[in-house]
Structures are given as C-alpha cells and as structure tokens.
Image (cartoon, rainbow, N blue to C red; front, side, top):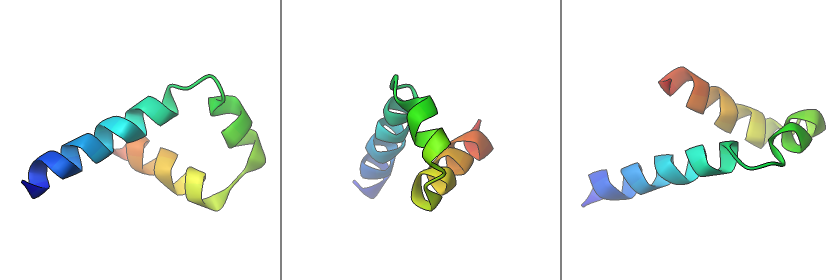
Length: 44
C-alpha cells in the first residue's frame, strides 16, 4: 500500500512541475520548491 502512496506522490510532483507557473516558482527561488524540482530531475 505504501508503494502506491509513494507512486501517487511522485505523480503529483510531476504534475506540479508541468504547471504553467513552473517558471514563476523557479524565479522565486523557494528552497522547498527547488529541492522538489531537483528531486524530480534526479529521478529522470
């Protein structure tokens, strides 16, 4: 069950990364979002 929860969490991260405000979040330089995007890029 935990695997599916993790899978859903990763899918939600990918969805957030593809939102139109991606550049807006990147420009703000928020540490939390930066770590999340780094985590996504590392998976790819």
